[in-house]
Image 1 (cartoon, rainbow, N blue to C red):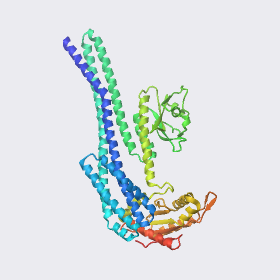
Image 2 (image 1 turned 60 degrees about the vertical axis):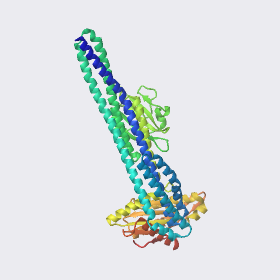
Image 3 (image 1 turned 180 degrees about the horizontal axis):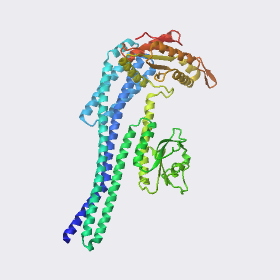
Image 4 (image 1 turned 90 degrees about the horizontal axis):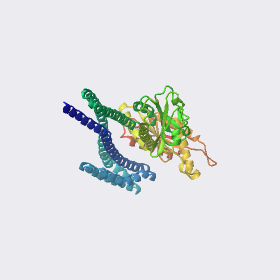
Length: 560
């Protein structure tokens, strides 16, 4: 009997040791697998950026080529030259990323088509520069360049979709792994509890001399249960954190943070109240981006000098009896025992603070390591949101005038004409060019010319509808897209803008800039022409007629 009892205790001891080892290795395995998946996600993102860059360079080159062929202005060649210069490096980057024979063949095909496209664009530009405009336009009209560009878009787009699908699969794998680890942790906890009950039962029925061994086994089992609970908590936190980071990866603007962050912070920091503050661009004050767990609204702003966490540059824990309580901490310490301020740092810069208020009896809420780790993850995610928002703004808006740029206009016009085609409505385009703008630059300098462009942009925005699109098309040339507007209504709008421009008066370096005028070309599209290029050419010809007719006037092209 005694020998069987000893064997049973040994077996239970071995099982407990195995569970302890599994629980100890579980965070390491989970972290290793998650890191491997994250590395694969980073590599896939780099590939996507490489293919996006290749397509952007080709589109920029083609935009510059067509602008030069249409406008005969060497300034249009700037995006062309930049795109051509970047294509070899972009192709080398694609070759480096190619990991399979199929992908290498795809890159080789892209390189071959790109070279053919570059040669085709170079020939048209050379013909244009040689004065043979008709031959250059005929070469464009042959559709050879369009076919090459369409095939390139198809190949690059198909590969981007493949990479996007691969990224989504990796994210699903990461989520599945975290859920599996959470389930494993819970299973290990239940197994430990079963072993505890069995061990206690056997020890109670054993001989008195086994009492000490029973107490040791119970203590070991309790330690295992604690480890299992901690592992389950860590796995749950990892799962919630992964979901939060995935949601933040889909956030488009910083304003959406106030809806997304509280959902996950309530789960990651239960039984707490808190807020996230982010620096303004001016870096003089921090603005509230999200809050949770408070009965009343927290302060909308916090001065950097009011927070000891920011002043000390580290995690700062304050209590009502603590000597270094933050000036913004009254609302937190009125309802909670402690207030923790954690600076959020990204790329070496402090971007904001995470404020967490909790009670002393809640050990999970007072886990400073967990709060600091959460602040680091939030820092990177929020920084990425701000960066994406900045890049999106820079890619669509002209920095001088605040108007949309040419790329955004071209895409908007394509979508609008497709809508007009479906609905049978009408769309008008107004092209305008500031008269004698070179004279303004020569007389008042380029700073004066920039002020005129900015003032003209403000005047135009005041005279158009919210649904209209205003774009700086190049230099002093602006273009308007007026949905659901015919040529006559568009001409009235252009006339209103023309009259308003003449009233512009600008004081610059002791000089007065006035008598600003512009010539306007109006074209209407009802779905019968080839597409947006024909519409733009009609408006451009009408603009040329306005220039030729004496400037400072509005000319309507023939209705299409």
